[in-house]
Length: 163
Image 1 (cartoon, rainbow, N blue to C red):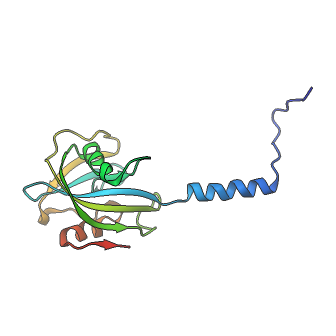
Image 2: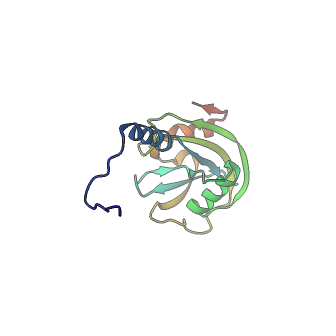
Image 3: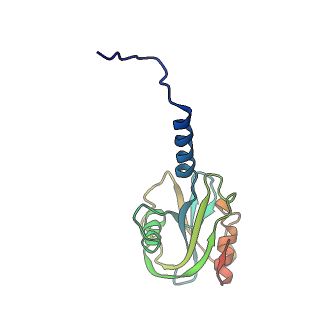
């Protein structure tokens, strides 16, 4: 009858550890794909959210969920984070991939233009979003969270940027 040993470290061959570490490196050290909206209301005000983790304003957005398209993620994130509905999705503003931009992880953020309604309800996650604001161009706060100043400036000036 085999003996069960408790309290002893299980021995795993070195070769197996090397494989586990290599798999973990590939699975856990991949860029995260996210979307952000350069969103404006019909009267031209820019929509921003204030994050609770940094206390700074940011473009609304988040990570792409498994099985979700970018086109579906933008309206979902805008509704969840800012309580707004998308009137129309616009053109691509930029793709941002600088690894040091976000201290949490290596994010690849796709920014798109959107025309939205004014906020109709509070954010779904008040632990993440402290408040929602609409700003005329001359009133935009700075700096924005997670290096989003360049993203907003690019959206304001036009053209497409990618890194």
